[in-house]
Image (cartoon, rainbow over the protein chains, first blue to last red):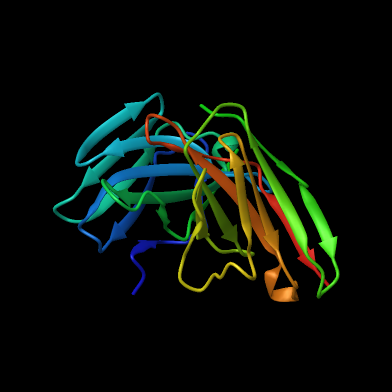
Length: 112
Length: 113
């Protein structure tokens, strides 16, 4: 079993839809949670960064962390064709090991 | 956020040869990381490179195959040695900023024939 599980998709939605992307994890030591967006042939771009449980909002993006369920989500409101990319969840422990553990990525296609 | 550049951006190499990838950051950072992203896959950590100390390698990656240098706080290199087609991948460096977030370079696309 992988430490971080993420549905690879592809996920296809119409423009303007609300998108929900999710990851589950097994390591209870994870404290920092991130979402990266990766366009084709580009490096990952940090979208959201959350510490411990709770919600964080930035424009059309909302990140949620539920540590009791070991479940994190990224919501995209009013999705745009420019949101079409692969979304990667990543997480790490609070002390010691600083490297990130990634999910496999969800490919999102927003249809105009 | 830190601005990270990598050279080369892509390369096609013959099996048995070696390629050195450079990673340059526009600010001083303590922690740098090298990841590999195989076609259609997510990112896998190769090693952590801190200035002034030996790189720390993840299980399945060894120094003889992936030697790393970290001569100062803004630069690192990763060499892929004695390449085989299985080494065809995207190689990414990342840095951790003082806010403990990681930013990635654009990647180096390697094809080994």
